[in-house]
Amino acid sequence: MTLGITMTALCLIVLIPLSALVLRALSVGPEAFWDITSDPRTLAALKLSFGAAFIAAAINMVFGTLLAWVIVRYRFAGRKLIDAAIDLPFALPTAVAGIALATIYAPNGWIGAVAKELGFKIAFTPLGVVLALIFIGLPFVVRTVQPVLEETELDIEEASALLGASRIRTIFQVVLPQIYPAFLTGTALAFARGVGEYGSIIFIAGNIPMVSEIAPLLIVIKLEEFDYAGATVVATIMLATSFILLLAINRFQAWGQNKIGNV
Amino acid sequence: MRIRVTLILVAVVFLCAFLFLPLAIVFIEAFRKGLFVFMSAFSDPDALAAIRLTLLVAAIAVPFNAIFGVAAAWTIAKFNFRGKNFLLTLIDLPFSISPVISGLVYVLLFGAQGWFGHWLKAHNVEIIFAVPGIVLATIFVTFPFVAREIIPLMQAQGTSEEEAALTLGASGWHTFLHVTLPNIKWALLYGVLLCNARAMGEFGAVSVVSGHIRGKTDTVPLHIEVLYNDYNFTAAFAVATLLASLGLVTLLLKSILEWKFADNLAATHHR
Image (cartoon, rainbow over all chains, first blue to last red; front, side, top):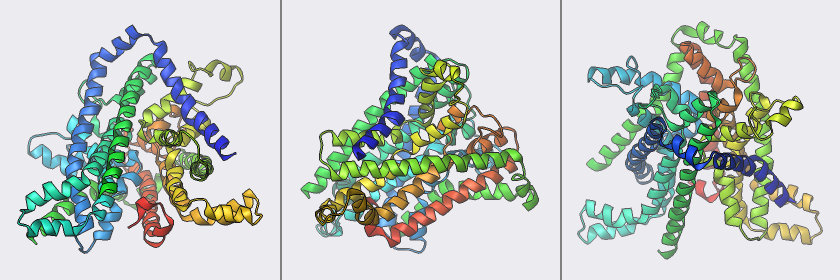
């Protein structure tokens, strides 16, 4: 009976709606599909969503791993507070994060004003999109790397140091190989989330077509213009990439489990 | 030692700039013009309607997903069948889909030009640009939250306790209430907390299906957007403090659960 409930809910809520999207996209026809995809505005939006998500994920890869390292390895006042605060971007609704970030980085905001003095703009440019995505993606990397780092044995690092390896060499040849799969999984998760992110970006981005307009916003705009075909095509491209990412993430995770199994 | 201090400093500065500052700005902006202006944001009937709608949507979506989560976890943990991993991937699917697409799929199904659009119109049923659409989109985006907290825990616990109860003559329902439920209650609560926070704060998916009818189909996050776009910043941040506080309370309760009941949560939350 529980299988029945599970399958019914899954079909009604997830599978039928998603198949509606795919069937709709197929009914558009290859020529129209290509026209919408190759439209410069679509391409610019996709490039921004993927590009900004990629840069933000790369930055989170570095700082997320650093944060996980600090939380796991060091004992200092406020560590538990930091540990709990990492999940803030998960808990803070995206619209709230969006207006807060827009206010901070706008030319008259706290950080935006400093940037203006230095001669560049953050809000209403692609840079603002990247900053919002750093905020959104950070917990993914920390929360994936942290448990793996907790499992690693200090002995191995000590042995490496005793045998004369430098700190850098210990990090690259002893620590990194152990956390590598988690590191990639977390970064891929942050990237996947960033590509589809909407609420936290639209306030800070300024949404200038061809410059700071993200792909999810383009879908919304096309829907508002009753261009269902256009919205569906952009959505299908994004959905297809999410699938590929999901597969990649599953591979990384399986790889990580094998790795732990072998140790 | 020097490296340790440097790394901790970098971590703290990064967190302050990227996490704490946005949170602080919500409260600073909300109270900037004093308590009176802050409070007046809540005497707006549209704000009250938005709060009521958000509570209603969460009151439907969260129990739905809690029941589904337990049913799915039971199915996956207690029975053996082919395609289990595929089923797990399908349950997780809404997590990796853009919220905008989550809303779009329902527009394609129930919207004026959607599959069921004509039928719905002929029968005077409103889903898109009405409350049912908002509920559906919210259920979609929060679909995996409870399930993924309970599934790993139930899998780890195995079936031996349930088998013992059944052998001793307890009914299936009785076994669930007295054996399974006590074993998963903290994980269930954990999942419900996260599910509720997301349900009340969801923006993208809801924004696509809502139609932004003030006082009718605007949830709290959508009302914040309307206020902000009207340059009514103080009111926008005042209403935003509600959701920010909800987020903080969720974080606090979540941390308490992780510290006190770590053994009763899924392995990934052990600290």
